Image 1 (cartoon, rainbow, N blue to C red):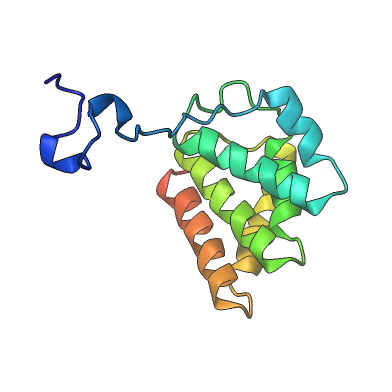
Image 2 (tube, rainbow, N blue to C red):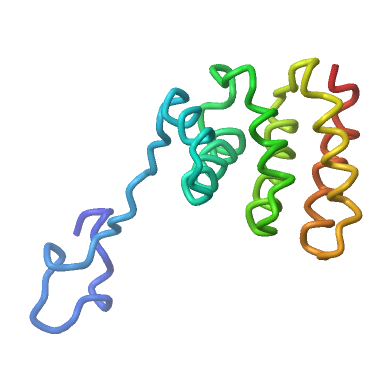
Length: 146
């Protein structure tokens, strides 16, 4: 029996190792930065939400933020102040992931980002406030942003 085949007792009667279910999980390939940058500018909040998710995944797990657009934090700041609380929380967590990954906002974006993080850290909705505080802690934990 090969090392990648399931144990004999895992097979149903009348089935062999070739009939055993295989793990079909495929690795997700993030879109290139050009596509993400376009998606972050769209009017559709769903497209922007998906783009923020892809950026967060890049910052946390994949190839990093070396090729990120220079105005990435401007887009994330706008999403963090969105009226949709779920989109706002998601963007705040993305900001934290980007900061932890070593990305820094452009000088022109620092004031707006700091303002958004402070406002969201005291938001009425607890989960938005917690995300705002996580992002603030990420900024404070990594030292000066600029």
